[in-house]
Amino acid sequence: MKETGCHIHFPDSNRNPELEKSNMVLRRLSRFG
Image (cartoon, rainbow, N blue to C red; front, top):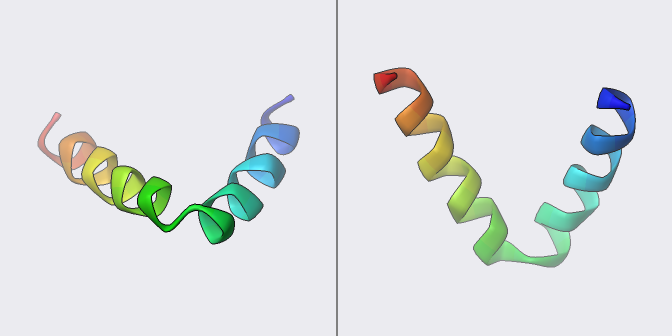
């Protein structure tokens, strides 16, 4: 299931630049956490 999520995530990011920004923010929060 994890693989499927990654696969869907990659194309989603390319189609929606806004989603990519959200991912960057989540990554930053993850580092803090």
